[in-house]
Length: 274
Image 1: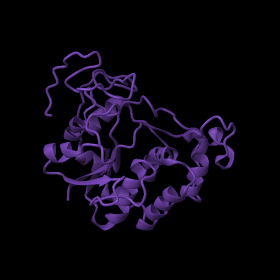
Image 2: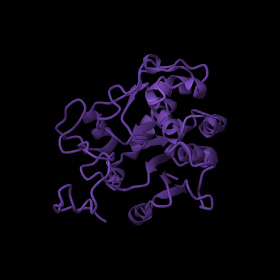
Image 3: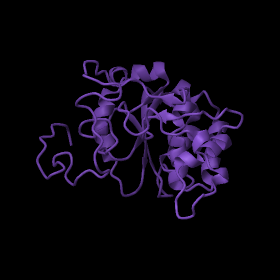
Image 4: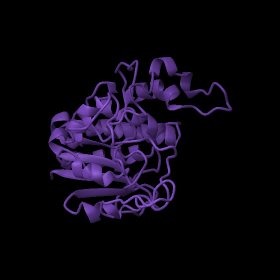
């Protein structure tokens, strides 16, 4: 199997776009809040991380050559495309580069996560203890202890940098850098940690690139990234972004009617398939 898409979804999300627009691609669509779904998880905790680990455990011996891990929504603020369209990124994805790189983040734009997001040693608090009961713990504060629990014996990095938001592709060889037992152990941590759904998932969001063989700071130059990951080699770029590609929206919810209707209610002349 050359490529498989793994989708982390909930019952209210529409994932029909995957089969409709990518009929030749294998797909595993997990529904985290439906225990009776064909593909589900032991517990709806840890956001997409529970799905990703469950797939790596259950399919360890039958993984595709390339596995793409995705959120459910086709159009979402974090998708690295002018229309925030995951389908457009998948159509352009250079699978040969996934094979040679092992791990490929589906975001090239640096905004949120790069060049530095977490300083585990400097940002840490003790034993997940909240310093101020009126304030919630943050990923930065809990990352050091979580990393030590997940990666015993491995030195905690001084800095972590990677573009958000837990959507990436890996080769089978990269997945097999670790044993099935390792993935089981990490899922057990996710099931049992006192960290909540958001924090536990966010910790792993900033660890996937390390797990699959990259340095703790993995922020390729934007021009290099768009060329290698998406085959777009003629863009006008700065270090962290390229013109006409990605703009961080002011809010995380796209307007009703997107991509045909824009932020001010205007028609956008969207030319892609729906």
